Structures are given as C-alpha cells and as structure tokens.
Amino acid sequence: MEYFTEFGYVGLFLASFLAATILPLSSEVVLVFLLLKSFNPVILISVATFGNVLGSFVNYSIGAWGSVFIIRRFLRISEYDFSRAKQRFKKHGVYSLFFAWVPIIGDPLTVVAGVLKINILLFFSLVTSGKLVRYIIITYATLL
Image (cartoon, rainbow, N blue to C red; front, side, top):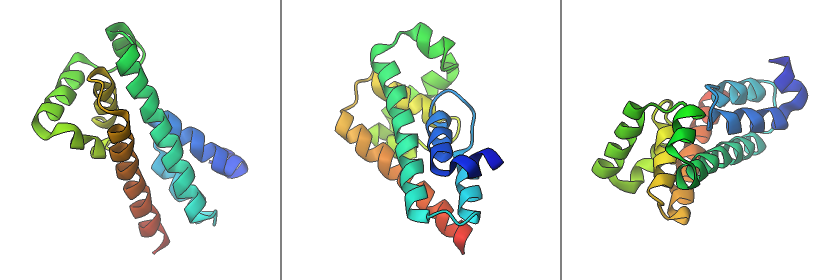
C-alpha cells in the first residue's frame, strides 16, 4: 500500500482505471487508504471517477469494435455473464448502466452497451453518475 501513498493520485487513477477493465482490483480500498492518509477528498473522488469511467469506455469500445474472441479471451467475460448482461438490458433498459460500478456485473454491462451501440452520451451520463455517487458515499462513510 505504500506504493499508493508514494504515487497518490496517480496510483488511484491507475487502480480505478484497471478495476473497470480486465483486472480484479478494488479501487475502493485504495480510495479509503488515501483518504485515511489525508489526501484531498474532492480530488480523490474526481480522480477515481475519471479513471473508472475511462476504464468503462475501454470496455464499451471493445464491445463496439472488438470481436467475440477479444471479449472472451482478454476480458474473460463468460458466455453466461455476457448473456446475463444482455438480459439485464432487455429487462431494465439502458438505465442499468447506472450500476456499472457493481462488481462482477458492471464490466459485462459496459461491454454489452458497446455491442448494442448504446448512445455514447447516455452511456457517459449513466456510468459517470453511478460511479461518482459510489465514490462520494465511500468518501463520506470513511470520513465520518
């Protein structure tokens, strides 16, 4: 964890970005750690949100322009998870993207959004608002 203290905001950005893509990382742990080390909460929330949303855009791009091979091989999204994400879109609509931050289901949702070519501005709005609210709640709970 000392790595994240030394690199602070850059470390949080990388953890947040990678957590939204292919690696099973927890950006929340890094955020809490840096909050407890008295880093600026507003900057931390901004950096974490930006990195996490950028990672979701990578997933969207892979869905929109990648092949099934890339989705299965590199993102390691199983047929089952991919199918469940598509069913969520059918059942709950595009607004399910607000929950793109949820572990396990979030990454497939953002990939499926790309496959289905969901409007990029709507994608951005929903994914960003969901991730921002999550980081604000975590920050608030940590600093109580």
